[in-house]
Image 1 (spheres, one colour):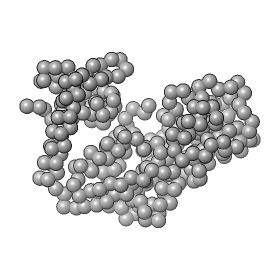
Image 2 (cartoon, one colour):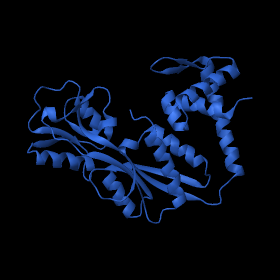
Image 3 (cartoon, rainbow, N blue to C red):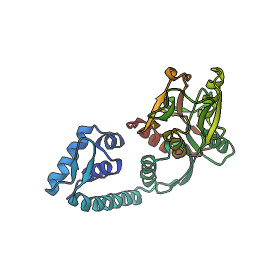
Image 4 (cartoon, rainbow, N blue to C red):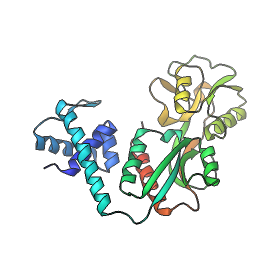
Length: 284
């Protein structure tokens, strides 16, 4: 018989693409995750993953088992939900900023919703300022996003440096006026970048107006424009520009959770736990 805990760990490693992220998701140490996988392989008598220093790949037997593991876990969740069905129901309308719009967070939300059969979660992705306005208009219950130097009340989650990102092989002298890739108003990163440049008497122009991080990354990777973004979003092919390039220091981005006054506190608590777990996982 399969151990549910070992199957859950196996699925987490595959879904998260690594042992460290799986450990963060399951609130385990990395050595515990490795131990679970080793015990599962001992139970089936076959290797399930081919592990290297950088990644892991399913073996043919691992690929067969992962489908069964997902089915077993789904049936386990359904049985638990049916026998412990909550008496309350609710529809949580969640607004998340671009930094959060990734599969890992959505899987966490899906898993949380599965534990409460009466709960439905709908997600809207956008700019924090726009999402907060929608919440104040009664169209969203909870907003998770970042602000810079703002007194807007909300539950503090974590903070990250806001930086200037450009292609990894920038020119020795930055263009004048400085070409920027920005989100439209009301964006805290846009406001912080424009304010700091004005204070430093650096002329700028909006070279690319973006509606997603994909556009922001593309503009910076191509060397077409410099983009203000949080440090964890600076991936391969990008570099961080700083005072040595003549650019001013940007403020930290403060990630917070905001909830409407009439939001069901039980639903808010569920999403709060999910986001806190997400924020505690390795960043980049």
